[in-house]
Structure formats: C-alpha cells, structure tokens
Amino acid sequence: MNEPIVARHWLATATPKAAPAIATTTVLALARIWNANGAEHSVGNAALMAVLSAGAAAAGVAAGNSTGDSVLVGTAFAASGALAFAGVAGYADGLPLPLLLWSLATAGAYGLAARYWRHDHRETVAYERQTSERREEYAHVERVETLRATTQIEVARTGAAYAEQLAQALVTRSTLPGFDPKVLEAAGLPEIPRGDR
Image (tube, rainbow, N blue to C red):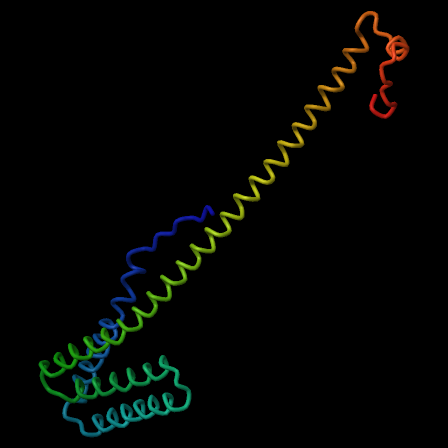
C-alpha cells in the first residue's frame, strides 16, 4: 500500500533512446579509422566485410526458420547491416557516402527500435494496470478485514464494560445498609443462582 516512489535518473531514461545513434556512430567512427589505416579501396577488406555481412544475414534467416525468435533474428540482421555499413564506410574515400549510410542506418535502427519500445510500453502499461487492479482488490479485502476486527474488538469491549458494571452493581448492592439476601428470599423474590453471583 505504501510503496516508495522511485524516480528514474534522466540518464537512465535517455540512454536506451540514444542507443541506436550511439551504435551507428560507433560503427562509422571505427570504419573511418579502419579507412585511414589502409582499408580505402582495399578489395580484400571489402570482400571480407561482404562475406561477414552475408554470413550474418544467413544466420538471421536460419534463426528465423528454425527458432522463430524475433530478437535473435533482429540481432543477426542488425549485425549484417552493421558489417555491410562498416565495409562500405571503410572502403569509400571521402565522407559523404559514409555519412549518408550512417543517416540511413540510424533511421532504420530507430524504426526497428520504436517497434520494440512500443511493445515494451504496452507490456509495462498492462502490467501496471493489472498490479493496480490487484492492489485495489487487496485494499478492499484489507478494509473489510479491518472493519471486522474493529467490530470484534468493540463487541469485546462492550461485553467487558457490561461485566464490569454488573460486578460493580453487585458489589454496591451488597454494601447498602440493610441489605439482607435472606429477607429478599423470604419475601418471595427469586433466588439469584449461585453461578451468577
């Protein structure tokens, strides 16, 4: 009922949203470093990246056919795209083509990520709704049990107060001057049973 309010740090909220841009920017930076270290116009390096990219794409197709796990398939195709992007960015001279590919890759990564973010958001909202309904239900049960327990306590207090008043009345009656239980019995009044005295 009294759960602490947890506020996420703004960096924890923003990091997942920045992940696609960080990933594509990292690939671009590494490819340009590779370009500066001899990959520019190197057919062997371009062929290596083409083979790695095709292998990652084939792994994605195989994973989709055998397991149907969308996360595994998406990861394999993302790796394929990153390898192809790195190959082209490393092979090309100049910066316009790598920047164009970077912008396309970033837009594609955000497009794919948005789908997963929407799915996660729907699941989070459904979970919070279900948790809220469960809390309301248990809060109702808790309120009913509290009322029942309070009623039982009040009934017990009332019974105890009545017993105290009855005992006080009997004590007070026996201390009155001229009170004689034998005279009352002789007058024909019913006798008080022994267990109730």
